[in-house]
Amino acid sequence: MFTESFEDFFSLQLPTIDINTEQLTWHRYNPRKEIARWGSSITSLDGKNTGVPDLDSIYEYNKEYKTSYKETDFRTLTEAGKAFEFLLPDFDLGRSHFIKLGSGGHFPFHRDLGMDSFRLIYCIQGCHPTNFVWIQNGRTLPLQDRRWYYVNTKMPHATFAFNPCVFAVFNVVNNEKSFNSLKRHLEIK
Image 1 (cartoon, one colour):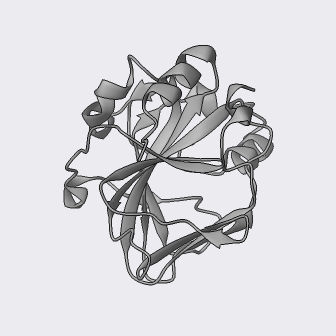
Image 2 (spheres, helix red, strand yellow; image 1 turned 135 degrees about the horizontal axis):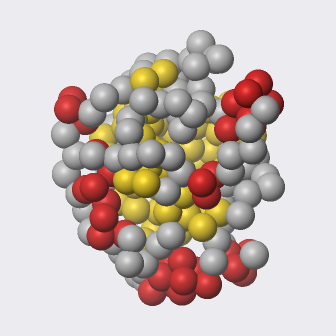
Image 3 (tube, helix red, strand yellow; image 1 turned 180 degrees about the horizontal axis):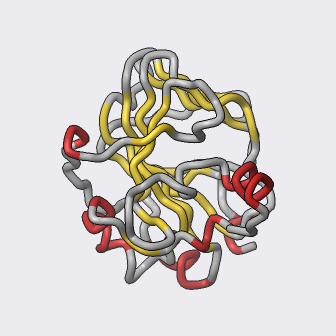
């Protein structure tokens, strides 16, 4: 919708946040798959960090439990998510979470299609090219810790961690308010 006129990846000027990842409550991310990855909810259906269903594959959860959740249904900040309240005046957040990848943790190549949201990524710890790679459209994205990015995850992409790393994924409702905020926060070099 609105973000189709953008490039597939760019840096944003948003405040950096210090997150003590040791104090987060971690749950298996997409528990049907035995991959070294865990999540901690930033938003959920009820503001609790149980991981259910917000850290599951929404597609697989809906299919198994005959529900119809969308990325944009998970809008209540958890206790850990309150660190990102500053985003709320600018962006309508949907399902958002911290992701911790262990050594060898990865997301295989995929596309996030059929969504009415876009993705913001905040790199927290260990997200540098010799430790963590995000491959998109045949190129490795130049990620750095303590930086914000817009990433078009409708394009083919995959991630791989050589050593543990932590980043946050924000699903943002693709509406005029969020689109205009995205334009305002573009990092121009």
